[in-house]
Length: 117
Length: 114
Image 1 (tube, each protein chain N blue to C red):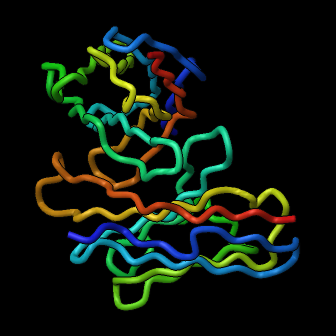
Image 2: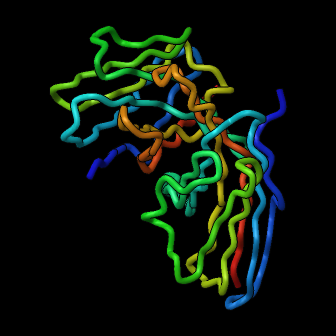
Image 3: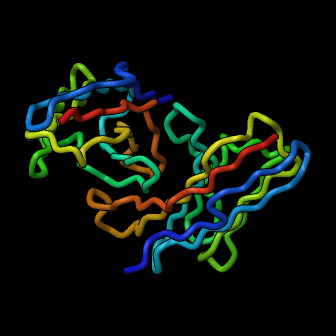
């Protein structure tokens, strides 16, 4: 089966510019996650969708970050305006969220590396 | 709030030897899941092994095994017969049983020496 797809893979922007990232989860996966991974740190959850509804966005800086998941499939994450501290890898992941919770597995995409100058 | 701590930023192991990566966590919940993820350089993060908190038996997956000490809130990963392909960042992660929210540690970079 195809994995989680993300684009672009790399993006360089100036501070105060806007940027958008796209994620296509594995087909049939209900849950989609966006993580921010700053160099040298572990992934930090920004937002979690279940189908097209938001489950958790408590760590999303809502004054500049927004995300949507239309029709419960693809998702976009936007930053407007970007700051220097937004430089990071943005990871998208998805999971089936079937009834077998104990065996549910999170699959990650390759990530988008954002550099803000 | 739950936290996950990995106190070893970097570890090295000789090829074919055994290495143990440490992870501690803090939670007030009784039902949860613990994971080890591997992130090779410039490659996607993948699941290595999982442990259900309600299971006393330690999980094993081929050369990978865990030492789960629930009372001590410790969850270490043992890699036996280390191979060059094991070189990667390893992240410990926690997930509540009732949600699909994951909390990751800061990672341990494992170097495998030939």
